[in-house]
Image (cartoon, rainbow, N blue to C red; front, side, top):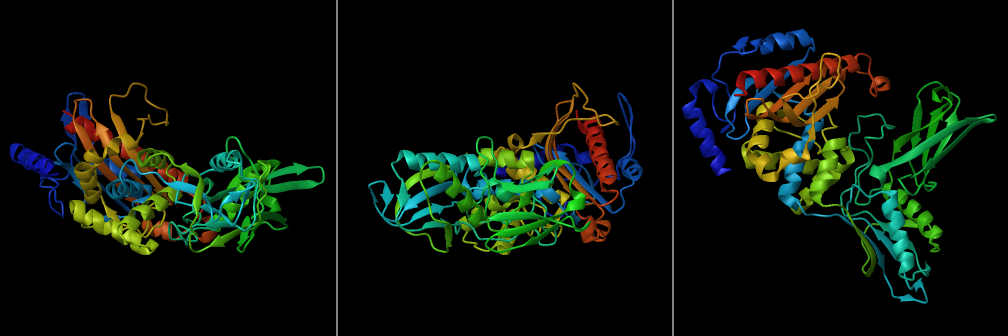
Length: 492
């Protein structure tokens, strides 16, 4: 970090017209507003004209800087704190790598509280979660097979499930509709991103419906969640919690057949339910799962480890999985002694402020799903330039292809972008790195958002409000136009 700061200062002294270095908050550009620029290929449009043509309403803020030095190249409202949406996962990735380390792995264990005699556990068997956000049904199936290979054929006591490795939350964002699969519960024992698969098929007698926990190799029936058809038009789904989670679905919303992932609110019972079925298939009958608050002592019979943290984060960034972000962020906060989800968001904000002077960053979660989080573009670029290189952040991001006006990928584009996208209703963000044809490496953050329009969406339309698709499309086109502008003007 010291070396980057020194190079940034030298860069600012060498090129006074390029603006200040990203050294101290708040960031301010000494340049006049970006105007049309003459380059070898013709005239590059002014940023203000591009923003005006996008007709987004709300606010547009951005910062672009030299990735190596942190030297500011161009900015618009750099200190305006806006909803980051899923670009918050950039912050979470850096936070987790700093606190847990790149090689960290989550462990899920089967623990016997007593000895195994004659194939029977003399005591309880415990399915103990370690907070793994990537645990799936196939993993549990392999654990059940390993338990059978170890000679276990049953238990004399109880089958316990423990989820206390991470603090529990009922939903990532309580303001979201209850049926959204990307807004499940989070705990220390998670399965299939805490989603259950609702399947339906129309027959001559009506509909067949069910719940399963399918993965690539196993698809056991689920008993801890049930679904029934309701004779109504709206709402499409209703939910009632309890030991067995009860769903209803409106008959009018069902076609010939299909499936949909629904969120799970009791992930420890869900995982226990699925493991019980898989173990029975291996010749190891178990009692019904029973949650416990404290982890019993005993002998580890089987252990499953997740991929290392970098691989977990790479998939999280690629698929923008909210549950993974929350689990990883909470695990990092626990290393700092923070045991509450709300305080975990604050802890990550405080860490960003201390690590790189992020003065306008206040997040309430680790995924960006909650619209209450706020991040300024200048703070995001500070993270990208100061902490990103050492953490290998660019290697965790997914390629963002350049597209033409019709949305088709441009083959052989000379601009290379690796970044994280973010989308909420009438919020669209992009943060990452761009390689210009002239060789310059740039770090950038673009935040667009019409918060008032987002807040006005009624609950019944939050899954897909009218106009949001066209709005997001215009925002993404603006983001690409800005990157193309920067590549042409500052790329050399």
